[in-house]
Each structure stands twice: as structure tokens, then as C-alpha cells.
Length: 150
Image 1 (cartoon, one colour):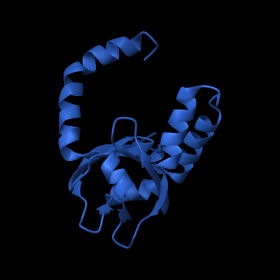
Image 2 (cartoon, rainbow, N blue to C red):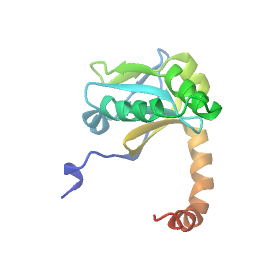
Image 3 (cartoon, one colour):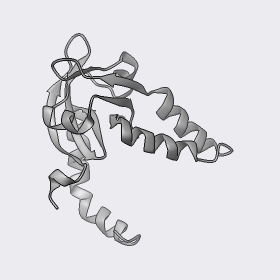
Image 4 (spheres, rainbow, N blue to C red):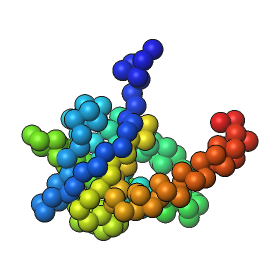
């Protein structure tokens, strides 16, 4: 089995959002996403871009959360109310709405990171800060996660 046999979005790509709020998604990643995707708020002030099949799985999980818990309602509201279905234009670009750009504090330069079943779109400065902090503690994270079977 090779990576070609497994659905997986990986890699890190630097791009820009143009003045018309369009962002080009790399061709390699677009092929995995298919004809359309869903763009929404991520959990750490980034934007998450899900292939429709993966979005359906996430929506199903969110739908099964207990609505009696304030955290469940809040998470569902944040994810669903921020979501927008996007299509790729002839050049492989998507339109990023203002409210999502503001949420992720994206100005012009972005990093698109493949994270297994979705893409994360970060403001480049925030990504660099996050990555620098995370890379210093990745060993500790792995140790902590080994306690739960990682």
C-alpha cells in the first residue's frame, strides 16, 4: 500500500489571498478535495477546509453531541454557523468570506497545511508562531499521548 492508495492531505504550502478574497488551493490537494469542499472555522484561529465526504463525517459527529451540554452547543454553533460550501474556479481558487478572514486574522499571506482529512488555512505569521512553539514541545506531546495509546 502506498500513499496513493490512502486518502490523506499532507504538506505545507505558502500562498496569498488576492484583493478579491480568492485563495488558490494547490493542484495536488485539489485533486484530493474533489469538485467542492466546506470552509469553516478551525479550533485554533485557522480556517478548516473539508472535502465534502469528510465534512459529512464531522457533521454527523457534531450532530450526535448532547445538546444539553453548553460546550456541545457552542462547538456546533461555531463550526456550522461559520461554514460555507466552496467551489473551485477554473484556476483552482476558492472565495474566502470576510467573516472567516477576520476570524483567522488572515490578511494576505497564508499557509495551507494538510492535516490528514482536512486542510488548515492559517495567517502566515500566526502559523510560524504556532509552529515554532509546537515544534519545541512535540516530544512532550508524543509522551503525553502515549498514555492513551498513541
